Image 1 (cartoon, each protein chain N blue to C red):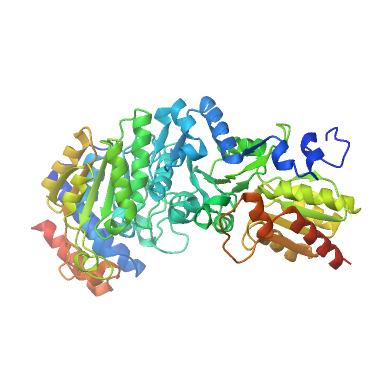
Image 2: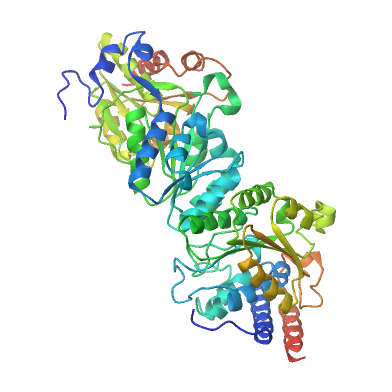
Length: 279
Length: 339
């Protein structure tokens, strides 16, 4: 641990910085997934700058908390957080998706310091986190495993295989966070394949379930801290979020799932995000 | 290399004496190699505390329930959920455990293939995939449980290591060798019994094929349960005055190109034999090697482009063209083409 946990105000500023990084990266790369990166930005910021026990100088530290972005396409938010946290130099952010970059189009553990699990094909990350949590229990380690799952991703059957298993093994060292922005690649989640009543489903599978506003930093921090200390079962935090959060023309617009902003759009987005911090 | 009076290496004398007998599959000691895996993993568990076994509700069939009874804290039954099991194995491997994810070939290589590719092989994680019911060895169960194509599928994945050992002895050696290797290994086992061909002096090494029988007229390169069929074929051909080399190519990938090219140079004709589709597996691997390096007459024994059916194991080998007789015919065919 090289720095103390941030307070709420600093977390909000860091989330804005990370949002700016996301816009810059995807604009420079001319490809990527801004919508789901922005919706997860507050949660990822709270994890890396408040909750998680990690050491950027020693990314493979065996006792570290683990994080998996199971909705791997939103990796710009992960890369930005890792760079801001000091896992690698920020200059790498401009190489996203380019040849020879350490920042692949989807997260790749063997190339990027701090990436705890390769992700990209949906429905794997919660299972991988479950494996890490089982190992933690077996070896009596104190680390916690955090997994962000997408709402569209929750249509994968393997998510529910993992849900069943985590409850069977009472993995209270595992927390899943549902980034519930209600948009997926094609259309709204409700239209494509509804997942509701999603809180009831997780409860029925044997999880401790909380529901929060995933952009209210106080609520995010409180929920994550609560999950970390909850005993006897895994926790699912259903974070109600807005796809494209922080950029007016991206918010709740399905097309920004996987489209890069042009330079003038990026400029406007950066201005909006910065104005938001100033206010 | 050993004291066998015959042109054999490492093959047990009791097996050699039964090669031309109808009693080979009844009198010789035999065991399904899935049980040999279960015995090997039990022993491995004693000496390596990092070894964990993951099951998917077939632990009583494969007998990994013995590991679960001996090491309950290191045994994890995922139920009928192979996708979750494979990705969880990947997560465990990131923490330094050595998970053996255990199920049937069809489920390991197809039901959970996305996890096997993206979460295990792409990050090159130290997961061992223990796949029973390879080929049409689960005879009576029929097609849904017969791993006809798992070896071909696994061979297509970058960086994969695939072992299909011929008998219970080498299956155990393969399990122990896989645990020493840092990276994913796919281990293939039979459902049905195969004769115990070897003793523990067999020099098992991943990626090193072993010559079981000397010969100069042609070479049979075989894996898993067709190794014994290849030995039977060679013995029948010997009665016709033909001297056929037999190579146990237990590691399908990485292929021992050196041993196969040497056999190609020295014998001038090759037949491959595998209880797997005749495309994508051992036959393809050997053909690819030869066509780019030393093209010679060659023939592949394998399952043609067809699904098999239920039936007794040995009868299925005969019906689907995988028996010793078919291998011997193929050798005679390549010999006719050899100039």
